[in-house]
Structure formats: C-alpha cells, structure tokens
Length: 43
Image (cartoon, rainbow, N blue to C red):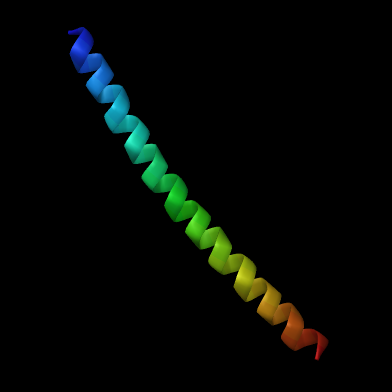
C-alpha cells in the first residue's frame, strides 16, 4: 500500500512537470509574439 502511494506521487509529479513545460512553452511564444507586435507597432 505504501509503495503504491509513492508510485502515484511520482506519476503525478511527472505529469505536473509536463504541464508546466507546456505552459512555459506557450507563455514563451506569447511573450515573443507580443514583443514582435510591439516592435512592429513602434516602427
């Protein structure tokens, strides 16, 4: 029973990390596109 709980915790942690990476990736792209839009607007 204890092993199962540890296994579940590790599984959940890796899942969360995957989601975090996806969110970071999207915010990174959004940040770049926002900067490009600002640069185009300024010029």
